[in-house]
Image (cartoon, rainbow, N blue to C red; front, side, top):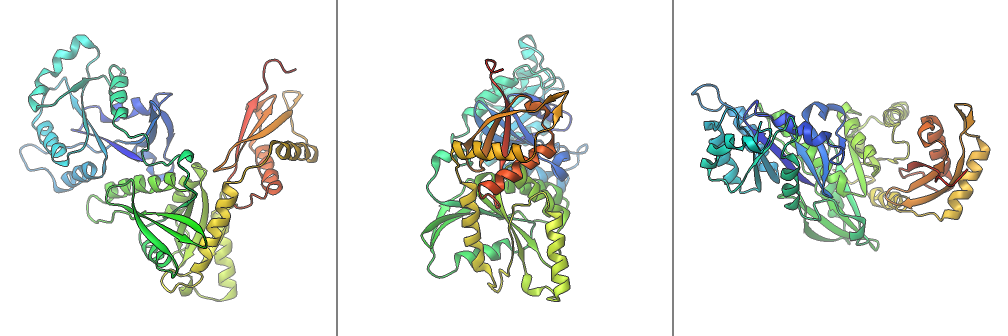
Amino acid sequence: MVLVAIIGRPNVGKSTLYNRIAGRRRALVDDFPGVTRDRNQTEVVWDEKRFILADTAGYGVSGDSALEEGTLEQVRLTIEEADILLFVADAKTGLHPEDRSLVQLARKAAKPTFFAANKIDGPEQARHMTEFFELGLDRIYPISAAHGFGVGELLTDLAETIPEADGSLSEKEDTGEIRMAIIGRPNVGKSTLMNRILGEPRVIVSPVPGTTRDAVDSTFERDGQRYLLIDTAGIRRKGRVREKIEKISVVKALESIDRSHVALILLDALEGVTDQDLHIAGYVQERFRACVIGINKWDMVNKDPKHVKNLKAEIRERFRFLPHAPILTFSALSGQRVGKILPTIREVFGQYNRRVTTGLVNRALEQTVQKHEPPMVAGRRLKFYYATQSSVRPPTFVLFCNRPDAIHFSYERYLTNQFREAFGLSMSPIRMVFRGRQRNQD
């Protein structure tokens, strides 16, 4: 998915613009949860174009001294990793030497760049941005991030530069292959596992350019099934820019999840389940992607039966929000039980892509309601009229009822579990959508 980074000096209104874009009803899709909430990254749709918007730290120097190494490295990294740059300057304070320096950095990167002069509340104030034309820019957008002036036009033009296929392959582009992403923290063995899978005999491998710069996905065939193994290599650098690096790595991991059908969440058996593992799994859950939990380095685990039993129980308990996800144990380094991965991925994908006829769906709904009658809501019985499956990946069921706004999460969970059992979807996420009945119904 395309990454749009807002860059500029401190206090020019970058965060205000970010909030303006993220808060618009037709633009906002969702905020990233967990540890990244305070890092301001949001998935956005504008004019049917999807992209990730990232707010960034301000580019600034202290007095006449040289730019601090850490800050400069952060800015360079942002410019390097972003696909499109959204440059924000303060029209009221005027052109600043740091604006000139940052424009030069952006030009060297040769990325599509949109320049916005902020704090202009209307056309009559456009005169305040005149001096910014000294930068030799083709166009400067006068905007008010606080009040919304000019922001829509800016986003419309920005969206036009995003290709129709922006990194998230649509269902219309289905080629019969299973798109699989191996995700996880650094050093859990992702690259080793990729190499182990691709290095198996009788595997046809060919490189396919990925949507992330310098990333190469791999297509291969096994037992008559084509797979696309999505490159999820992370950025690993140490030093003062570590937090920024991790932020960009999260964006890239999200791209991999968005492009995949099935995500293999890779854990380190020796370290157990960490909070970051759960955050990563949370991204998969929120995007309704199918998944498998893989426990790597299993050959190094104490094989005492009690220890093994407790370890597996702990993993299942901590991933209880993904009850459908199979758990596999293996060693990518030695190859032990790695052969179970692709057959499991294929089985999971089969359920993820399963379609059920409307007749079977309504029969299951009727039996489910008879088994456990819906609760009373404000003195009236909650009623379900009919249901249908609207889509796959994940299997999505639309249930029509009289009070869609009053369905308790516990009854929704009951419906989900019953549908899962009825349709053989034990390894797939399910999406339930509740809609009100039409006006002409009593």
